[in-house]
Amino acid sequence: MSHPIKQLWLYNDWANKSIINAIKPQIEKIPSSAIKLLSHIVNAQVIWLSRLNGEKSNLGVWDEHTIMECEKYHNLSSDGLEKKIREYDESEMLNISYLTTKNDQFENLFGDIILHIFNHGTYHRAQIAAAMRKNGFDPINTDYISFVRK
Image (cartoon, rainbow, N blue to C red; front, side, top):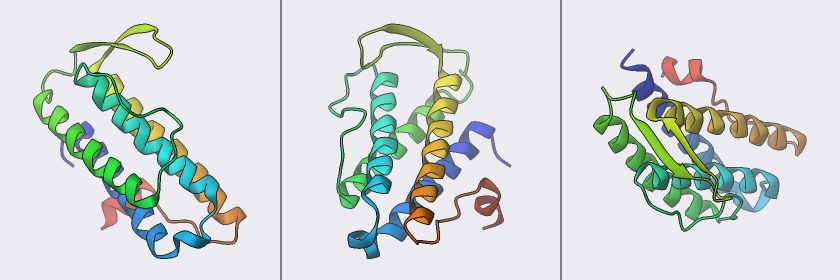
């Protein structure tokens, strides 16, 4: 296994792309709650990447997107997160100061923010799986162990 944070980035990228690629061909049948959650995952990635870059995001936490927009935002934010991880590979003790969407000021370690982003995605991918199952679809397996088996 590579560096754990890099490995989590690879897993997060794979898991989100797996869901996007599975949803695209059958988008008209997919429950809207699944798309709303996927939109939320990519919004959070964009927002946190903006914070890491010292910028303000142009997306809201719960903005809803088409599947193609979700794919675009995922790819942009995932590429940006990979770049930040490479830059800060040995600097996980770096403190990042940022404003929340409610304009509250916080400061957290870079590594903690990165772990939060990826854990957040895992949490909501599980909700997507539950929504899919509830609506008669077999959910996409995005378990970490499935990722490392490939």
